[in-house]
Length: 277
Ligand code: PMM
Image 1 (tube, rainbow, N blue to C red):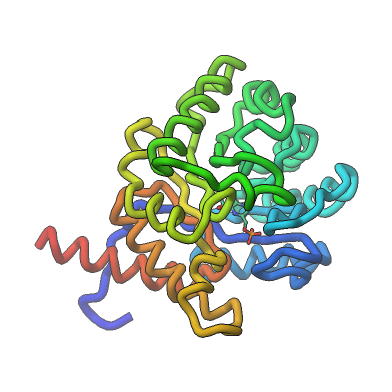
Image 2: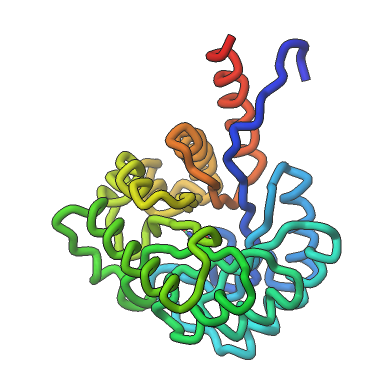
């Protein structure tokens, strides 16, 4: 590192994505084998990830559900091995049984894209385990979510619908301190609605809880690029969004290419330390 370049930590966590799936839109099939997924998680940490998010079910638009046993088979060995290596792990699942097995295997965060709506057993499991819980804004499963993107004011509606989920979770015994909110970019959101959610993260912040932003490689970024551009070309726009999210006070960013986001956040950290003089 050149002299004088000592970035401060921006305080925003980088969550690296490990999809143990054959069909995710962003990296489908690349880490489907457990050993490959574990090696990828280790690599993401070497690239600067603070934690690794392990998922066994693709949520790409139109995706069909994976069987519960298959999801467990994909996720648990990867979570166990990464946690055994001292890596902080979150589990990306809508199923309480998978969440519980992953926490028992060492996951410290349950990342539920349905905020408990897909499985009534989720909230009690979150309460029982005491794990941290990402509640993402969601209106329905991937096979129909594109038809659910009707809003009159997307930022306030996402805030209010997440506030209802917070009430339900707390009502089920979950400690508010354990909650993290996520606007759910691309989930029942059209391109311009994603941008409005990003530009108005302060509306979601009114709920007073940490915010996770998951823009990485999503369709609305692809729409800015030349037609047919490979998915990796979405990593630069993703890294820019990581910086802007950190500036907006995000607790974390969930990304596939950790290296570019880490470098971009280092620049922000140096900028912020320069601002302080
Ligand atoms: N997006 C995907 C999957 N899981 N979890 C959270 N909390 N936020 C997201 O935006 C999110 C998520 C879909 O992307 P992927 O299939 O590339 O993992």
